[in-house]
Length: 355
Image 1: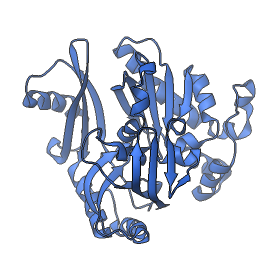
Image 2: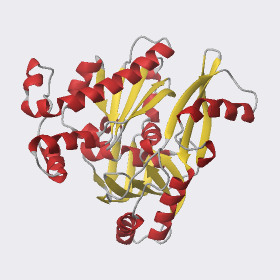
Image 3: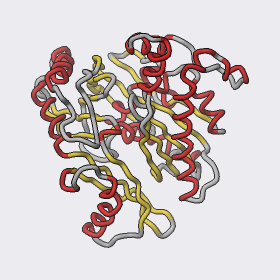
Image 4: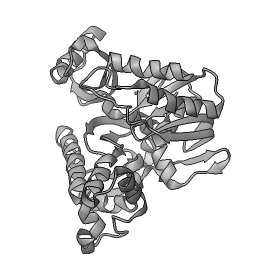
């Protein structure tokens, strides 16, 4: 939700696949320059949840992972922004009649979210923001996170040696990163779908004229492909993940041969589920807002690094699909970063473009 707020110079991305620490040199629309960018494998003890409190069974491996990055950068209790996976929170976009007081809006948000909260309402930290209008109604973004889980994550990082001053989610910061593109005059009137392909979940949002109109987080991500490969080939997940990174699954052009490409047949059921979730989110948007088409899809996150995945997604969604790496440049210690890293680091880089 971090479109506005204090400028930040250090970001710690606490992913369930990797933990990354980024230090800013400069940031402007379409270009980010980092002094340093370090990463380490995420501890398997780092778990996020909207169902249980204190999901991290053993905090020490998580603290050690963060501490190793902090030691390498020689930071000393620096203020830092924490990035958490999107599925650590309940996210909803409401289209509702205008409310004339904050209390009325809070009551409307509570009425909408409370039925899907697996814990009592008072267990959650809730934030909401009016993000636009549609016809006579107001569009409101609401995010709910379990209070104790926020405190737990912040406490771990404090003990590791940094001072968390803000916590945010991936999707909104990818949107920050490409805000210059979403609001470009050439995109006026166009429906642009941003899909953040995370490790354990996928977030699907639709923008029109630079304003977020719809957003859903669905429980399918890159880890599901890894598990499927591990199961099929009877290999450890680490080997399956390496196979996923090194092998080809998607053809460079639309072709009937795609369905019989062997590697693709292994993951086809997971890819089909992913497409179904994306299509369902898009269809919901088109129906609610009485729109007729999605003009473009932008994909980000580690899942965007499946070579040529944009080709088959474009075929299935019947629209143009491109990677977020096409929309900005990234330099670390003065050196340009490749497409795959720009896709993976898009959310963290977007933190530096707060206003």
